[in-house]
Each structure stands twice: as structure tokens, then as C-alpha cells.
Image 1 (tube, rainbow, N blue to C red):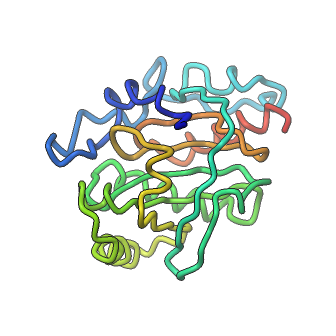
Image 2 (cartoon, rainbow, N blue to C red):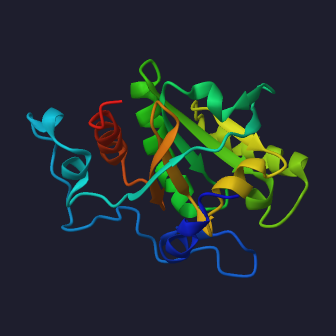
Length: 216
């Protein structure tokens, strides 16, 4: 049973790019997805004691999920088989994207900056490219892989990229559009869903603060 199907209606309205080839690629983009106000405040010095809700309040919008993650296996760009559960013990940013998606392209420099800062800590970024998403309904995983490889090489991104050749991951974490970002705590609980693109490194860092404030 897919535990994330309850999120599909929300995804329909705020995802950056529709997946189906029968609808326009772009929708009005809400990259910041803030609850209130136009600019996020900088974290205060006493925020270490704040609750997750206080950390995110009036800044950016994250949908609370609080359900155990479902595992899957995919292949990285080096040909290694990787399971999501291999990263248990780290805070995981699970990103679903496509090379043709403008909001995905916009957020990737932020992801790279974030990854470079946190890669030696307890945080990991996993960018998952599913065949049917990349090809907008196609099934040629080799063609999808080439598009992804060319894109990653062109822009020099270094965060881990996983090839979801048979859409195993996408069938579990499916939303109506990309990018879709799940934030998973160290115990393997999906805490938040960010539907749409991250607006910058600060937004990703606040998600980390919120999860750390849960005291896992």
C-alpha cells in the first residue's frame, strides 16, 4: 500500500512541473512556498531550544508526513546498487526531479551548495531520476540515463544521483509533479514533504534544524 497517496491532491496544486505529457510542463511556480511574509528571518541564537514548528513558522511551507519511509533500490551513476535504507542514521533529502523541469534546474545549484556544506556531516542529498518522469511517460531507461548523465556532467553537480530505472521509487513516492522533496529523519521517518523547489540553502538548513529539534 502506498503511504504517500494522501499527498497527491496537494501536489496537484503546488508542484513545479507536471509529469504527464498531456498537460503543460510548467505551472505557476511557488518555489518559496512560505506560509506568511515575503522574506525568511535568520535563525535566532536561542533557536536550538525551539520546537520544529517554531523553527519553520512563518518562513517556509513543509507538509508534515510523519510516516515510516518505504525502502527501494536504485542505481547510482557509478553503477552501484543503492538502497534508501543504506542511509538510515542520516537526515535524508530525497529529491525527485527531471532534466526538462525548470524549477528542478533552479533548485539544483542550491542543492549542490547545501550538499557541499553538509556532505561530511549527518545529512545526505539523494536526487532520484525515474525513467517515466524523465521521458514523460517513456520506458527506455538507457535514453533516460543518457539525458541525466549529460545534464549532470554539463553542470558539474556532485551530489548523489540515483537512476530509478523501473520506477520502483516513483511508484512509492509519486506526486503529480516534480520537483518533490521528502525530508527523512535518522530513524527512517518521513517528516516533511516539500512540494516544489527549494528556494535556497537556508530553506534546506531550516528543515535540518527542525528535524534535529525533534531530538532523534
